Amino acid sequence: MGFGIRKGDTVKVLAGKERGKSGRVLFVLPVKDKVIVEKVNVIKKHQKPSKKYQQGGIIEKENPIHISNVVLVCPKCSAPSKIGNQVLEDGRKLRLCKKCKEVID
Image 1 (cartoon, rainbow, N blue to C red):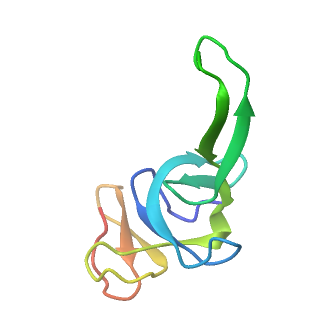
Image 2 (cartoon, one colour; image 1 turned 180 degrees about the horizontal axis):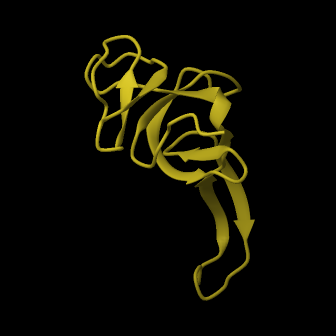
Image 3 (cartoon, helix red, strand yellow; image 1 turned 30 degrees about the vertical axis):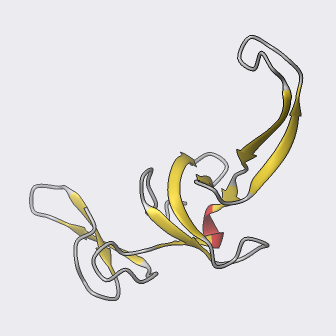
């Protein structure tokens, strides 16, 4: 699908119980078209003690959100906007903010 969202981008949630919240993308799961956003869609999981979690107990972790429910926040104009693409002569692709027409990366 694409959508142009990458790890480290700041996104805003458009739909669901977390609508309106913003955060940084921790992981992109392209096969499932989902993203994991920092401090958004946090669930509580009951974890048995193991080598990784010696204590066990209730652990809070971020759950994936479908990529269509988030929109990129432009670092230049700091507004949620769609992403456009531009191909340079040497074949590189750039992401553009559709509102301010600035290059994102």
